[in-house]
Length: 215
Image (cartoon, rainbow, N blue to C red; front, side):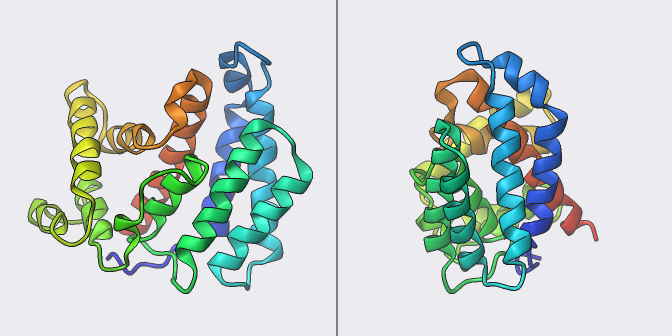
């Protein structure tokens, strides 16, 4: 299951649609410039366009091209953060495929502007895909426990696990709880509206991955 290939174009298309559907709410949440939703729509339109243009390229080349395009087309703080995250994600995935083991570390890197501590989890043999599959119903609890001994940074795992458990106790679904755990592991929680948009991005990606697991 962890070797299931992930199509970046399909993922970013879905995220772009989510941003458009929530544009007004994100603008309203931005109590400074009231345009965060506009920026997020633009960001993922540019990224999706880049994925289309480079649909036959390697994932690393797709991500780096998206970073370049984003830097050229937008000067917003959010766009520059995502551009930096795309560049770092490109470096992480260089020479690798995008599957359930690598996509979540890439997501963390993207959301954090390249500052998330994902090196240990980025290994193809880290077992992260099995852990994700377990939490989304695609594996077993035993697989999740075993994966913690296969390369995941224990402090990051414990932190994400604690956040996940707290969300579950408050009545969140598995995907909602995972979303909060992953967003809390990045640098985006400092401003409410950025945390809100990050949760939308993460939730959309996890929904897409969940769909892959149930095919």
